Amino acid sequence: KQEVTQIPAALSVPEGENLVLNCSFTDSAIYNLQWFRQDPGKGLTSLLLIQSSQREQTSGRLNASLDKSSGRSTLYIAASQPGDSATYLCAAPSGAGSYQLTFGKGTKLSVIP
Amino acid sequence: KAGVTQTPRYLIKTRGQQVTLSCSPISGHRSVSWYQQTPGQGLQFLFEYFSETQRNKGNFPGRFSGRQFSNSRSEMNVSTLELGDSALYLCASSLRDSQETQYFGPGTRLLVL
Image 1 (cartoon, each protein chain N blue to C red):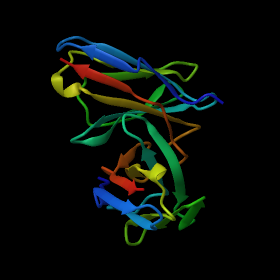
Image 2 (cartoon, chains in turn green, brown):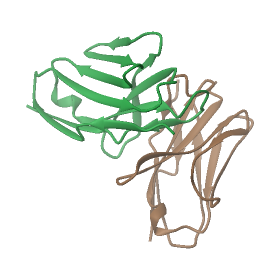
Image 3 (cartoon, chains in turn orange, yellow):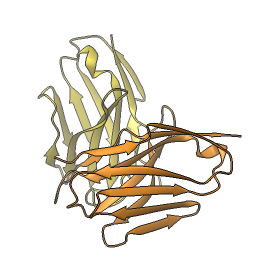
Image 4 (cartoon, each protein chain N blue to C red):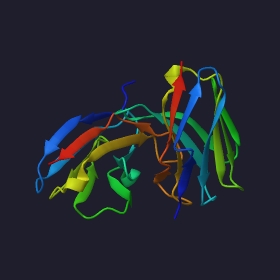
């Protein structure tokens, strides 16, 4: 059974700082991992999807990496802005060939102006 | 291209009642997944449909059911509502399965009194 853990649960940083969010998973037989953002009371917005063959994926100020052997993924946010304040969730397939995703409980990020 | 839409956005029901939630995926998407989100448990997978067939079901009681129509729209039904069913219900769509980017709707917030 896939388990996804995100540490820390909450993070507060001053504007402009670079930061890293962590995600770990127990079943490394995955073909991809996804990062999402959720604003309060809203649905999820997909940020990045990393295929197991890619190891890294970039979109603007965001960079996500995937290390299957260690069961870890990181989301790097450069030059953080107050608009980046949200909850960030990672999700991994629940097993080889599974059609469902297992989500971590998220990291709530606050960027202080 | 229109995003994933969910109706209704908010619902208040009483214990014992039943409720039906609707999800319209992005045009051309054939996979629809449903998730329940609560502060304590986070996002939990309910079920996934593809071409009117349920391919995966999460660990929820039989009171939770769903279906998908030929136009890929999906509904989920919860019968005999309990207080613990109060949650944000999210649906996500993708072209084929969870190997692809999942696009989430805004959710339906259900309050059971």
